Image 1 (cartoon, rainbow, N blue to C red):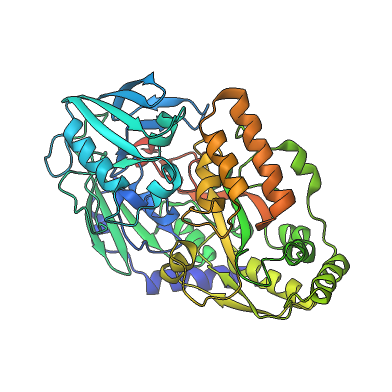
Image 2 (image 1 turned 180 degrees about the horizontal axis):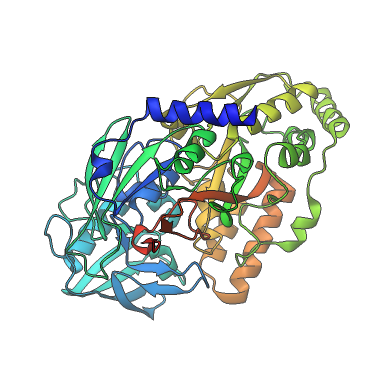
Amino acid sequence: MKYLIISAVICYVMTAFPITAEAQVTNKWIRVVQQSEPIDLDGCNSLNIVSGRILQQNIVETLVQKNPKNNSLMPRLATSWKRVDPLTWRFTLRQGVSFHDGAPFNAQALKASLDRTMGKGITCGNRTKFFANVALEVVPVDDHTVLLKTDKPDPILPMSMSGIYIVSPNTSIDKLSLGAIGTGPYVFDSWRAGQQILLKRNDKYWGAKPDVEGVIFMWRSESSVRAAMVEIGEADITTSIAPQDATNPKTDTSYINSETTTLNIDTTQPPLNDKRVRLALNYALDREAIRTNIFSKDYKHATQIVIPSIPGHNDAIDKQIFLYDPEKAKKLLAEARADGVLVDTEITLLGNQTQYPNAADVIESAYANYKAVGLNVKLQQLDLGRYRAYNSKPFPEGRGPTIMQKSHDNNLGDPVFSVFHRYACAGSNSKVCDPALDKEIERVTELAGVPRTRGWQGIFRTLYEDIVPDVMLYHMVGYARVSPRIIFIPDTTTNNELRVQEITFAKK
């Protein structure tokens, strides 16, 4: 039976998705298959998983790059940086670098790119994550020196810059790009809607010449199909397959990533604005059954939005995982109902199956658990475009109470990249508003060292014990399948970054 299923999948792949002429350019090209097609290819939105693997450090680059092996900061488009005063950092830029359109990379080009990122002409996901509550001014000193000035002390600004990607000064300031122009080792070549995106090696790249001459990015929603494509040689890499499909020890690798999954509660909408209802949502969910039956025991129960290795993670909260207790959930709902809370209001569960492998099974399990304790829930699966509308402000008017399936990646190493945009009143994705919390976030953001770490630990205690804005799920593990013809080792960044320049070909 298993053989018949695999054969059917392979047959489906070969007939429905024939190898294109472009994919046969040379045997030095590779093919990557991921879970969905991106909406845009703009350097300002490179944090989106499906866009990020195409864009980040391939087409567009950062001033500073984080080393995934030891979390240190390394030079990329900047060769050095130094804090001048509490509000100012000086960056020295790499010389001899050009954008793919021929424009020189210099201080003025950097200013144009950062002004675009920080401006209001486009919706920029990178800005809202890294500079949502900090104003940034770019002051060129000479062709290869800039001062980056902030309106409040920012002791981790170089770390923030490792998430800001630089685009050509000729990029539109009021339209998102469908083919970013950067300085990276690969140039955007073409996008055949619904089928594939091609990148070609940048032979004028300032750095070392990569082995891979070109990349074809494809997308298939089914994990089993993605795995089969690598198995039969139609693709070389898929970095996101479900645990049940990672069955070949010769090609499949598990890797620790920095992804944390949640069900995000809109605390502004009744009855979800009552803490007892939010607690009931947590007690009603059988997390261990989901972990065991849908994922694997490699996944870790999460109690907060950052992984344990990030300074500021509150270890004490890890001892307080919500255990499955449907009777307690029913009791909390009954108490709220007795106090006049409209507990029977219809609540919409918003799912998106491209969030991570088996995401559809997770939201369906949540739906069943919530129905079982008497909640009036309905399930709505969203495509990526509709999902974005519910994920970022302004949220749809008249949306009513919603619980949103979410996945959050913080591989840059500080809680500020998670907390402000998710939980502050002015946060772009926030469905929480607590003025006292906002004041504390602002205070801790300006700290450094041990005081900063302790400050974030206190904020996480407030969030997850006093406010309860999420049903926390898991710190995730990724599973990749890699063709034997190439050498690629996944790391903590692989969830949203695939550095093609580091891929080499196996010796025959």
